Every structure is written in structure tokens, then in C-alpha cells.
Length: 312
Image 1 (tube, rainbow, N blue to C red):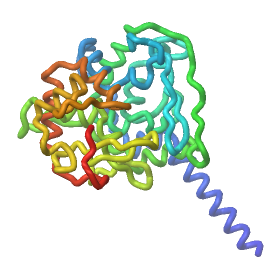
Image 2: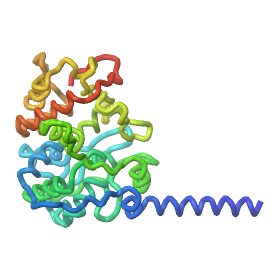
Image 3: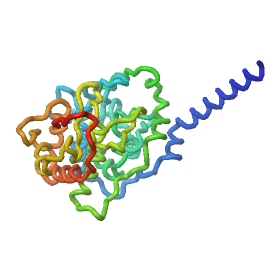
Image 4: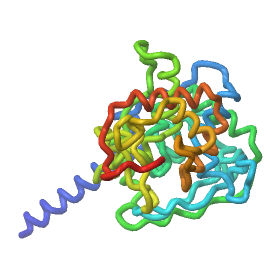
């Protein structure tokens, strides 16, 4: 009996040690990090503003009563099956926001989901898609954020049920599912397609809502953009692939038009969270919206996980 107890204790100690070692930020950087944290050019504020809107930063982080969408003291809570997430202050305030952050810390947060103090961020912050951004693009966003009003205010702590409340476990999730992908230019495709690829798959993080998830809550890449239950637990994010249950009958111009004014080809209008997405994409150029549409129309057609077509 003594030997059995000793063996069990040894196994528990070994498991705890392995868990601790694998959930440090250094472990992720060593095993999966791509070290793409160094910008290669001067900061471009115009690009930073464009990517800020394309990424929908204000949708989560702007104060709910802020019509300008530049008061980024934290937005409304995101209620999910895992619990409630509270978007933090990302204004340039030195105490409550990002004012005390370095550029390298911001880039690491965007691309690796790691906070300045080493804690892993929950993937409700879509760094799994932002991972496709270059360090230059992330640095441009950071430079733009620093031009916005510095505001006080800290978000409440996330309210999550066990075991999701164990933040350290997110580090293991990142090791399993956060890959080393920077979206590279495809020389076989047009400039518009490549621009759309970067906007849709990267900063725009469209797949975070429109791609089904696995039992581990990672994106099911085999069914990318085929539609998925809404993260908030109500509704359905529609199929964006050119399948008959998705956007097969839509032209690129019609998709681009929806991203500008929110109207479908049959004169219906989008609602819910998609209306907020359109509020962001409407600030982009016509060329960028058409680029996104061009990329979406090039996706492989995949049947929707929902039995009937759903209007975006």
C-alpha cells in the first residue's frame, strides 16, 4: 500500500510539474512561437486606422454610449456558453489601458495571446485570427490607438465556470491550437484576392463567427466559413462559402455592397452583430470591400451546418 501511495504521489507531482512547465509563456514561445515581433518599417497611422476598423476593435472595446467609437474604455460584456467576458480598456491611459505597454508587448498580445505579465488571454480575444497579421500591421494599430483619447476605467473580471476559470489552462489550449501562421502573399493570385485574404482571415477575423468549432472550442478548419451557431448562444452565423446554402447566388459586387450598406440583394437588411460588422466595414474603401468579396467567392463551397440557407 505504501508503494502504491508513493507511486500515485509521484505521478501527481510529475503531472503538476509538467502542467506548470507547459503553461508558462516561455514554453509557448519556445515550442510554438515564431518570434515575428519586430516591425520592419516605419509606422503607418492610416493603415492602423483602416485595420482598427476592419478588425472591429470598437465593437468590443468602445464605451456603449460612445457614438465616435474612439472612447475605448471597455464595451458591453460578451455572454457565451463558457461564461461572461468583459472587454478591457484599450485606450492609451497609462494605468487602466495600454498607455504603459510597449509596442513589442502589444504585438505579442495580438499575435500570441499573451499579456505583458505573461498570462494567456482567453480566445474570446480573437488572436487566433490576428495571428495571421504581420508585426508591421499590429504595430500600425498600436500607433493609431495611441492617438485616441486616454480614458480611465477597468473592466470587471471574467465570470467563468470551472474549469474555464483556470486561466493557466488556456496556455495548453494555445500549444494545441495556436499555430505559427502569418498570412503570406500568394503570387498565383491577384492583388485584390491577396488583400481580401488578409482582411477576411486575419484582422477581420470573419471565421471566428462563421466557422464551426470543435469540441475543444477551436475552429474546425475543415468547414471554414460554412456557418456556425452564434457565440452568444442565440442565432446562427451564416455560410459564407459559394455553396447553394451560402453565397453561391451572390456576386462579388453584391457582397461588397452588403459590407457597405448592410442590404442584401433582395433589399433585406442585416441585424444583430452583423449590423455592427457593417458599421465597421462601411468605413473601408470600396476596393477593400471588393477584395474581401473576391476572396470569399474563391472559397471552396461547403454545405452549411444548418439545413437551410440563412441570410447574412
